Length: 187
Image (tube, rainbow, N blue to C red; front, side):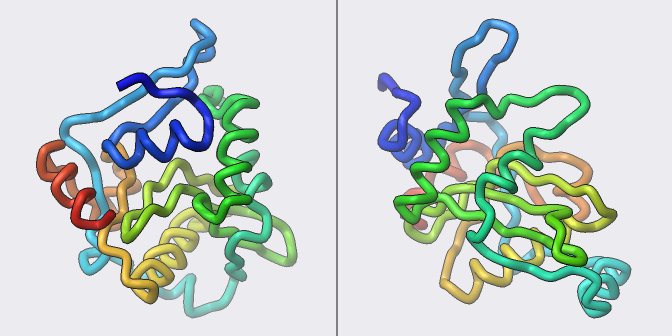
């Protein structure tokens, strides 16, 4: 399968369990299909007591799809560098305009302090990246995302790779073959 880095190519890739990352060193797009794959089971999402307290305190305000590019910029703002290239802004921005890419924004005193974005196809949400400028802001974004996905009948939340952050929220690794079966059912 030949994949192009454009909205149709991204959608095709996601439908086959593949996602892109830009290689800044070699200045080219790379395509990934990890095995194992990491998902957060929507009914297995874990909210720690301290995170639940943060949510209850109302320290943050959640919004959806109101500052998509701002969330992408926050995700790209990393000391170690980023794989989010100018082309990512263009392509994912177009997917957002088409209603296929979505963001969760976390605000504190009206300022964007965290968020996440990804692509929704059928009952699957492929989370691309997240960021935070305030403690727990990215976790609060995931709380909001999971709640919204459950309300809308989604069945799959793909987070690509296992990190300690994901694991603390209930993420699990599954074989790619199982991921592809779940993806097919979700689509």
